[in-house]
Amino acid sequence: MEIFLCFAHHGYKTDKEETLFYDFAVQGYDLMISYQDKFYYFMVDDDGVRLSDDAFTAKITRFESGNDVLEHFLIDGKPLIKMIDKLDECEPI
Figure 1: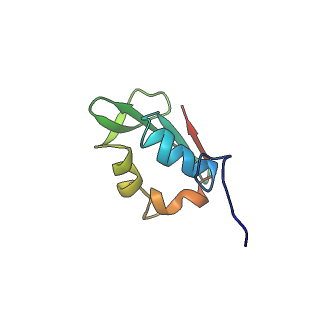
Figure 2: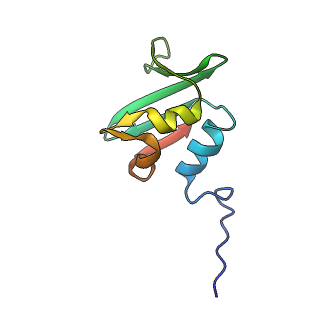
Figure 3: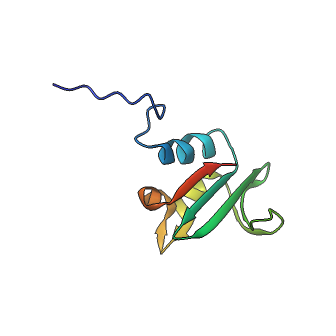
């Protein structure tokens, strides 16, 4: 019987999961993700989360929360939460 403990990512399977679920959705850090050479920037403020441009000046789309982004932001027609393992990068900013 093997016991698998994951301390490297604070209980999450990967560093991407830790960043999305904990740093972004729970702690409220801003987020940068990339997928197939396209970058997405999510800025957290008191009024929710906004998809922004790379200069952080345009507020493109507003989401209620980080969890809302995970469930409703689509990449290739799929929610971000289903694309985690396919992301090239995922970093708090």
